[in-house]
Image (cartoon, helix red, strand yellow):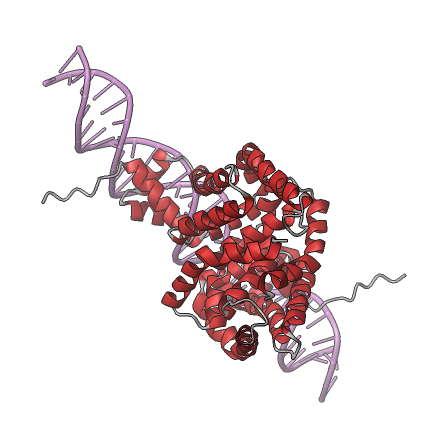
Length: 204
Length: 204
DNA sequence: AGATGGATTGACCGTTTGGTTAAGATGATG
DNA sequence: CATCATCTTAACCAAACGGTCAATCCATCT
């Protein structure tokens, strides 16, 4: 029974602690001391590995984005038929974010606070995937298979329906009087309901 | 031509400056010095009017929420037929937020950071309005006028479609390659498109 | 003019914050 | 065992921060 919980390297311990604190407190609210404490190390060591708060936070932001963005983009890039693609992207995203429910708020926050960084570092290489989705939508409209809708609006709608509930969780919970379990159950329902909602909205 | 831009009282000047800084930098990122500077006053005077950062921020948060929440709730409380109600709430919200585009991010942030405050201070008195909307939806489902959908899911969907684009603006802009004017135009389109999207999705 | 009381200020204070430094562990290598 | 680079620490530092204070300003009233 030698306790050895897959001992993480100091660097990995720091990154996990940093991610936890940054997601919880936000960029400005996070303290280097707290990150060090949670990583079980000294504050000096923290600066030894990652020279400054800025560099550490930039790393965490990039890590957070690069973990979630490709997941969605990969689905949008498949050759699935449009409705199935919508079903899959909704399910993929909701499944993932349910296990990382602080991520959306953090990303949305920092991307708004520093759009340029996000724009250049991550999106420009991923835009091709979106082009494929856009053509697919335009084609379906042209063929009369779906109601006239711009790909931009449809993209926004799917993103909104999938991401927002995690950002607005306390508002929704309070507004509807949902307990933690209630909310979780409703989120589970969304895995199928959102896609069908969208499909009913656009099906010709 | 006596320039006199409706000279605000010192207190009002402070509140406006505080709101601007808090929305821009977030709660933790905002500095009392910057608020004082923007209000054109001394930092000591700032504490003379509002004793601490906490009390000032609590005021701004409450102000922000109480400005936007009743607007939506009032619409949900009207006797309009369901589809018209959806049209109106979408239009009302989008019109208002377009002119206060930093508000949603700020509110979502602080409500997540301190849900209890939000829950007790604001929502409990407003939940009655939502009950009316919920009954209306349940009734429409029972009568077969709309597709089976829980009022919770429908509420989340409308909220999502209306609010998220403002939170995810940089992501959407980058993803779709929209200029500032492009984005603004798409948001203008949403004023009518979102409601019709929702109605198509639920109409039996 | 003098007194009163709220509004306003510059100078100051204690604490917290991100960051540094110099001195030691530690462990692999010759 | 000596060497050397990598880790790790306690102690420290300057700057920034929220907040306070005594002193002034200034309009109003007597």
